[in-house]
Image (tube, rainbow, N blue to C red):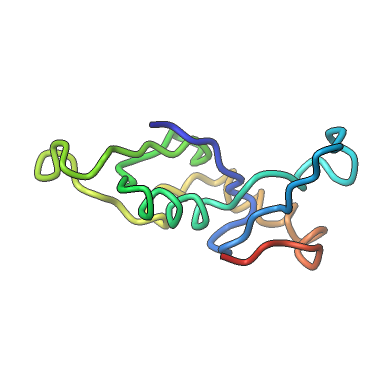
Length: 104
């Protein structure tokens, strides 16, 4: 399973609250979605493990537990957030870091 995350949110366990009438980008171009850490938590609850990401660290790759566990080990979030563009994204998050989020 591949899930897009907002790597700009960094290691914060946050999700932007759902707005049924959201008209992107109503408030801010980054103010939607969930952080990498939040998506890993959700995946673990659902029985999946993080095994990698694309080069830029926003598409996370998960595999169901019990499938090739020894061949494809779990990786930690930090290890897939190492592209220089990720650190640039953290700066963009500063503008909205104090906005309303669901902390998970």
